[in-house]
Length: 90
Image 1: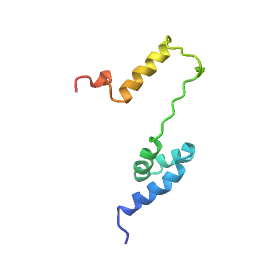
Image 2: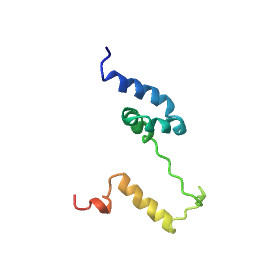
Image 3: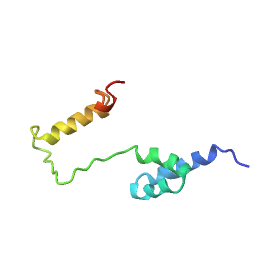
Image 4: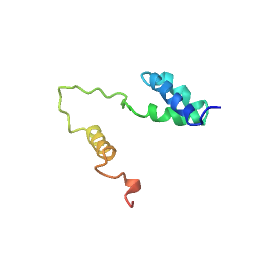
């Protein structure tokens, strides 16, 4: 009989190999709860943001648009500099 903590460790090691391709890792979320709890943290380690119909020129410093300020505010919340409005009373 195997130790119950070994299976999650093995799954995490296997899923870490799938982490290079999120499309391969995503189906593991819906197998069962154990697989979800093992694969979700791996899937969320690296998040890429993509905004449709927004092409940024690396060489232009367009800091006047509303998208720039929204992204700046989002970055402050994600980095812990400010709290989001829904938890301002915490």
